[in-house]
Image 1: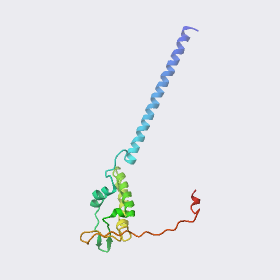
Image 2: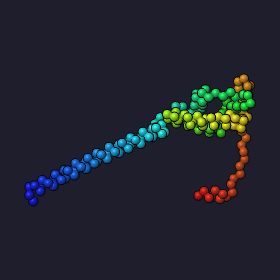
Image 3: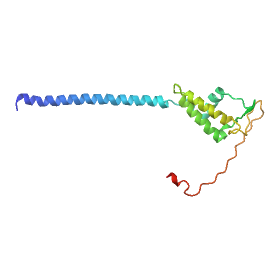
Image 4: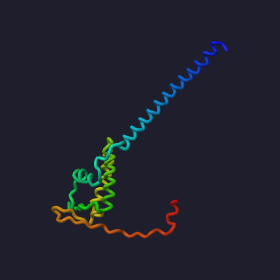
Length: 169
């Protein structure tokens, strides 16, 4: 082995080591960039780590929904809007209002998120306040008289025959 040959082996190893280090640095930067992009997409899509503005549906209803979107309850022209001050005793209302609250919490964090949320609100309010809604047998207090709460009657349902749902498996 000559002197030139013995120096060539360490130089080749040093070159390879340098190339591997450069490749490792490139891949490390690529991973960091991808993680950053994923984190930014997560923040834009679901609000990231933003806590809800209101801690409960009751707080959201009292501090935002009812003051922002007031509706006259009782006789209004040819339409009768219903409200129950004990709204939290109506399972359907709680479900619909909670869904609206969750949707609102997400929508407020997106630039145009309120547009679809308002369409959903426009759909849900007539169902909640309408003649067939969960408050149909209730009355609000005020000029209309004394508040009244009447739970909606439950509808009976027979259990399905045995194995009826087996097609699902």
